[in-house]
Length: 249
Image (tube, rainbow, N blue to C red):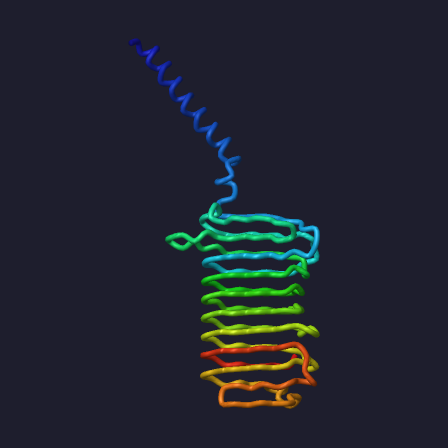
């Protein structure tokens, strides 16, 4: 083969390779896996007060009330395909598949204030703020913080972890906080009326200034019950290995 023909062939092969690389570079930004790696994003617009359920395995969960009608869910995870969602009427259900090794997913969720919540987690912090809908939290190992909450019903149960609540108690409401191993800290308005049943099996119960307004008191070595300001919503607080502390706002 002549040197001129060989040189022409080499030039053609080089040009073809360059065009292939350019074509790949042009198409790559449109591939979803490259554009949004490790993100699960959904937005829902319910036709009424929504009930949002999240079942997570490992990772932090933050729920914040906002002024929009939509429910916005963002999860950061290495396996977005492991997250499933389903909508049935005003029920929105999001869940992370259990797998080995465990899939971590950190959720940031924005909801209308009147959304009711059911949050389930195995491991990870849980924070809820500004919500007026009913709240149920169940976890194996979590620090749970509920702030600026005005729900008529709150139930928090953790196996290991501290619970912090800062909010209002509504007339006719029911509030239950339980940790097998952890402190429970409640920050309530001074004028809050409630029926209290508190048990701390290994540590102390500190009612602070609320002790002065408590009537019909029954005390034991590990429990206190009574009515604050003639009673009202049911407030049940139990820790098997930890302290109970009540603060006035």
